[in-house]
Image (tube, rainbow, N blue to C red; front, side, top):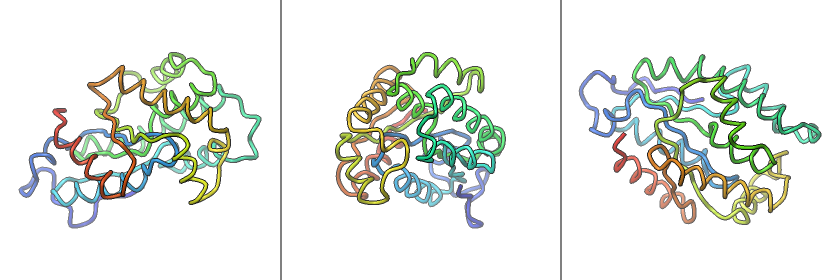
Length: 227
């Protein structure tokens, strides 16, 4: 998890752009299929926003806390191939609840913008692709974190084939990435379905092209977002 640098302009002081003022205290998520480049794009977005005077906290889901990082290790370990989808969902919710209490809520209350690499949108997509009813996933989420939703979730979109090729070339496969092409096609479809169902809270960015091109698309989304 990244933290605001010492030279970040105070959210209550001078030097903030209009966009920075709009995003202070907001909870934003960057999500999408494997290989879409979420982590890279999130870091670049955070640096850009800090340059506009906004205090930014970067984090990831699952993980972002000591408890969450241990859960993340379990979830991604190929040794746990027998794990049921229900167990996966509950572990994700446990990590998420701790992250909200320990990192996200305190940052928002201090007028920082939280940028999170994945959130419940990923659980809906991945566990939904594995056979769990997305409505059941959201019901469990509501029990864990009632009434809490990201202000904006940006889905980085690309074909499953392209994403898996990128992942294989860069780091090999973890337990989720080893589930096969058809599974990941269903994942992509469920991400896009969420964006269509909730256009007020979701935006889609094409993840094809150079890192710079994709970053420009994300910045354009934030500049146009009305909050």
